[in-house]
Figure 1 (cartoon, each protein chain N blue to C red):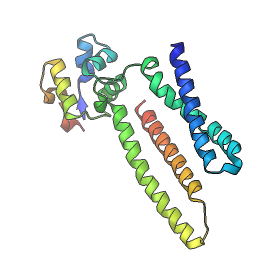
Figure 2 (cartoon, chains in turn brown, cyan; figure 1 turned 180 degrees about the horizontal axis):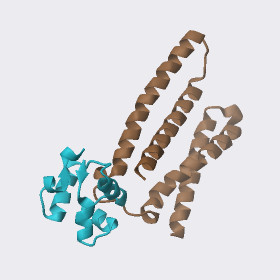
Figure 3 (cartoon, chains in turn blue, brown; figure 1 turned 45 degrees about the horizontal axis):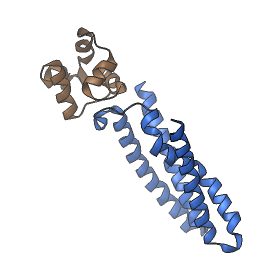
Length: 134
Length: 65
């Protein structure tokens, strides 16, 4: 088990380091600053990837044989599809607001906020469905 | 959709977890089924009927909605 934890941590370090180096290469003048900032910011998700590969299969319970027939699967489908429609609505309203106001925003910021919105939307919808069933 | 899943399970002395194992689904799925808050897919309905040795319409009552 210790070896799996180490492998997950090493995977996180390698992936985050790789992303950091890649980000640094696009701005040679501030190579180390960009490399370190990007590596630090992506370390968490990168470790998550390592956990998924090396640990999730041995620390959690085995999934049911017919996952597609479970109520949790239905919750996920309902949440994801509703969140997709919410995302389109927000993107459409946001585009209209930007067109009317003439405000210019960085595409990377807008995309990041849309992703965060989608995550939060799915999480809230899943929680509500789970609470209703309890 | 109303059903008598809980009665059938209890008559066999099974826990919700045991029935979930027999059906290959989660315990929460069995809980939601028994409360009538989750309509099973057709394959799951067939497995439920097979586990209890009866027909689907013996377990589920569509008019009870």
